[in-house]
Every structure is written in C-alpha cells, then in structure tokens.
Image (cartoon, rainbow, N blue to C red; front, side, top):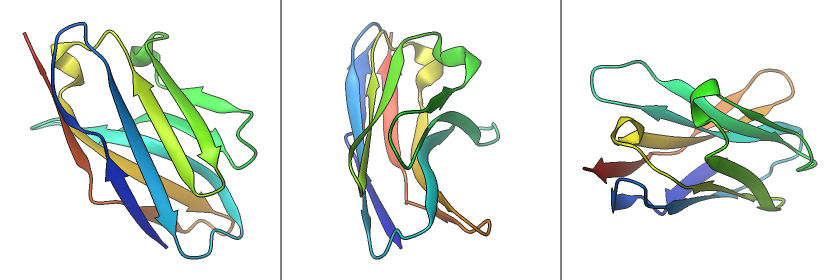
Length: 115
C-alpha cells in the first residue's frame, strides 16, 4: 500500500486548508485511515482517524472542533482544517492501519500557519 498526501501549504492564522490522502494498492482488511502530525522538535502525534466505514471518527483533544476528517471513497481520506493556529504548523502524515497491526505511512505534507 502506498499513501500519497497533498494539500499542505502556507496559510495565515485563522485560515483553512484541506488535506487529502489517496491510497494505492489493496486496502482489504483496513481498519482505519487517519492523519498524524509532527512539529519541529516534537514527537509525532495523532490528529484524527476514521474507520473503514467512514462513520466513526476519532480526534485529538487539541483539534477542539476545528478539523473534520472524512472518507471520500474507499481509498481517499480528507482532513478539513479550519481556524488554524501557529501551533498547527507541522508535517502532516497520512496513515492506514490494517487488521493484524500493519501500519502504512505516507511521506507527509507540510502545513505552515503564519501569524
């Protein structure tokens, strides 16, 4: 499985961005897809995940209702990010988890929130 993330960029405080992640290859057995992020000097952290059915989402506390994860189709997941803050500056990684515990990661897309 390969994951390709897109949609990162530079945005001003309070602005919005939409990240998209497309999977190629077989996704048979996928449990969820999601987004993680890693800011400079910090560990990678969960942002949001969504189950394979697209009807259950899980968000980190810091999201605070600002982000929405969605399953556009079986192989594409998006993250709508609104009211962005400087602390949201990070490389955002798409990930997918399979039954049996296998995790796959995309290369990441940089989000920079300027004040």
